Amino acid sequence: MGGQACIVYGGAEFSRDVDLAVDPTESNLRRVRAALSALKAEPAYFPPLSSRVLRRGHACHFRCRVPEAHGLRVDLRSKMRGVAGFPVLWNRRVERKAGQPALRIKILSLPDLVRAKKTQRDKDWPMIRRMIDAEIVSTPRPQSARVKFWLKECRTPEVLIDLVREFRQIALREARTRAAVREAMSGDPDRVYRELRAEEDRERREDRTYWTPLMRELESQRLGRHS
Image 1 (tube, one colour):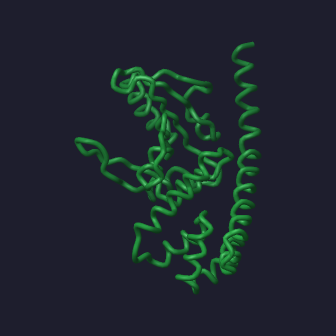
Image 2 (spheres, one colour):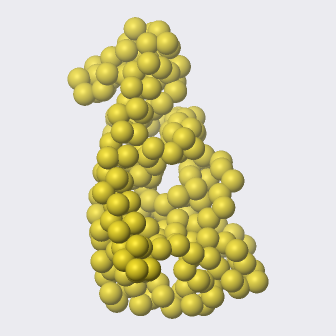
Image 3 (cartoon, one colour):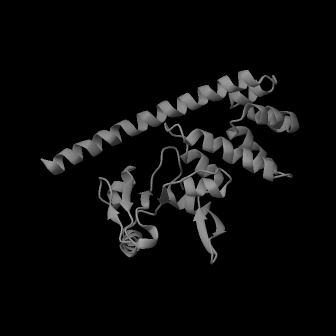
């Protein structure tokens, strides 16, 4: 669900860790712990892995010690701001082949990954833009549902303007709910850019608001553990 998934969708990134969305049931966490044990993974940060911690929205971090993956960090999460619950994410997952010999990996669908990447971190926003642009270029005959998704999430002014011109009727409907689409109808990239920036600023503020109580909770637990 992190940088590795972005690479699959064409958003090339040097990723230093592996981010996984996991089902936080106790039976599944037993399998997760067995996998971490096989990797000789040690907790890297607070908090400790538990169903309660994951359901609250916290991330659990580990550092692998097996020779073939020494130093690789594995981050586990189950709940993300604005993203559907794990059962829905699992039903919408995408499977791709990777590696030699080929393995089948399960990744978030592109709409879910885009939603998960709308954070306060600077590096996430260019990644969203690259993934959407890559899919547009690689999909010559899109269905209307995919066009709606592009119009809703595209973050490149010139590309959004081209979408509006090519899919005018769909764009007229989407313009009711997205100001950037309305601005794209003007054909002025600067106007579109300003609205896209306003969207990003709103999402960053909402992400900071979401994380503030969680960070306070972690700090309180950390201090209590060391008192």
